Length: 127
Picture 1 (spheres, rainbow, N blue to C red):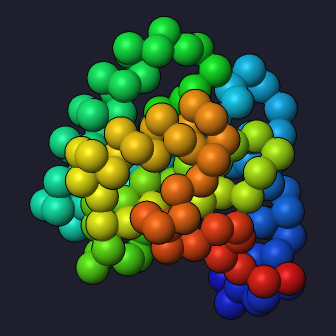
Picture 2: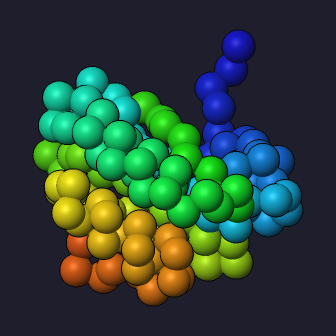
């Protein structure tokens, strides 16, 4: 097996775009709680519990709550990524229960990103 070239990775990325982005489907928002070992050690399970409770209280069915492994930013855990349909993803860092609730209320329900808790907004790669 030969080495993978940058061009190959770009082709794979393009092919997978539709499966990882919220372009179609019934969900308006996708919340990803980063639950790698570092995230769990920093409190990601508690953040997941808070978000589950907030989601349950709303009764909304257009919000997807999911998990992922390590995002590679261990010193900023616990972290979540919020993707609102037709908007750039936002990665939130150094979360607490209170911050997670504010993000849920402002960004997820009202589509107003909470800039002061965000590490990045938009794609992490350039074209």
